[in-house]
Image 1: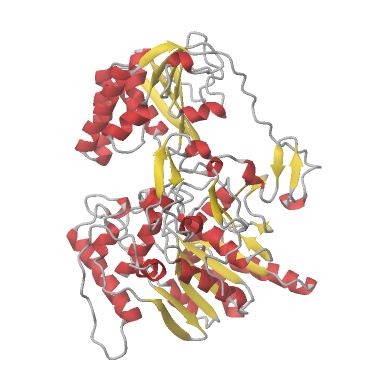
Image 2: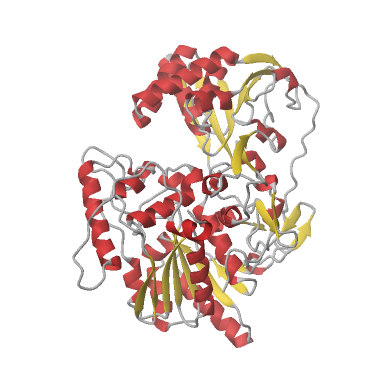
Length: 299
Length: 320
């Protein structure tokens, strides 16, 4: 049995990718299952999806803990999640990254295929939805399914839901990614510390769960503690403000849903705190003097 | 009077919350709490706002925050306010309920609080469906909209019911203040929240909050879309104070509703016939709100323009 785990962010299509892969496997006459892991996910938050492929009927219904292959749809996840946890030593990794596989530090030396799927998706689909491109790369790295079956599965699955033209374009994205994928061995240097969790006993828990502001070993808790939750990894594009053009109308500060744009009244200035920017682009769209530009990459 | 320039710098709803990029609810909450200030206690029933604003043991609110069940926003606010009154504390009890928690599930408890004219501030964040549980139809879903419970098929395309007129239901309780707000009209938004803050009795603020995944829109357009909604008549900005209705912003000429619909994936399947039905509904609403006494009914429609992100309010602020 070949088991896969998909790491992505809500909205990138990790769930669709797992389902499409399963469909491609079925087209080739195998048995396959695919299912997501559900939590309280918003668009942009880390999500998980799983797939199993076998020539026999599959009875296992659990999550995949010892994968043969891990697919990472967003390389910013590497900073916070140990994506290769439990992977078999001969397992492989498919990752959406601008870097060469030899430069990617996964904490383990593994056979790795890297593809800049975001660029492929932006070019072909005009949106940073990387699931079909990453499937092309997956076909190249593992060979578990043929690229032709992936194309066919993409065409039927996406074509049914979004129209034949979208299906064709997504199949093209998969094909281009298949050809562009670079395969190498990842670096195994970093040690990722898992974030500590606050796990109080029932005696320690306040009545009714009424928390007051406090600091624990795991960081802040209670009111205002979300400030420690950095969400910069969600963004594909980030805003840059041209100070010369800016008229300080403060509309961007007013509209920003995140609090990324901070006003400092004493200095009469605005500051952008990229730790919290999710890259929605409202500020660029609403700026009356076009002083804000959305720029791809880390600022 | 508070304007954008004199709003407080401090974030009482901190960064780092987990709302989707471009979330209209997050924008509305942040700015409402900025105006309301520190002496506020917040109640949020089951909704997106409770999930992205607080994930135990973390929270984005810097003011006291309370959460219990879905249907009791009005009752909880009443209880909280009563407790503070007994303790002799002057605070504003504000409830941020979604459209599901107001139009359908919380209607009885909201109605009770309104009937008793309790001194609380009720805020409805109207994103026109149950977005938190994955886009199911609510009483606030407009005609023709796709949701998972009103799917687009061969026989029926999208929601066949019209949006419930919550404004009339709430104002029928003869409450001191009811207002509709949109985040795309900042001056109007701030003025209304401030007004509601200073009035005694049951105040109801009805906020129009775009939902990026539920409406299938580009996150960057979530403010622009509220402006288009107002320009086309899908959303009207007015306030109802002591039995008198006042329009606070009147768009110049009615823009075709198509202009608003085409921006959103949830309406993209709509046939010409369905658009006509919706347009007639909008015309009726437009005449109800904007028509002066004795004037004939208007249903002139200006065809969609290429791009008009800038509204009358922006022109007032920044010149042409």
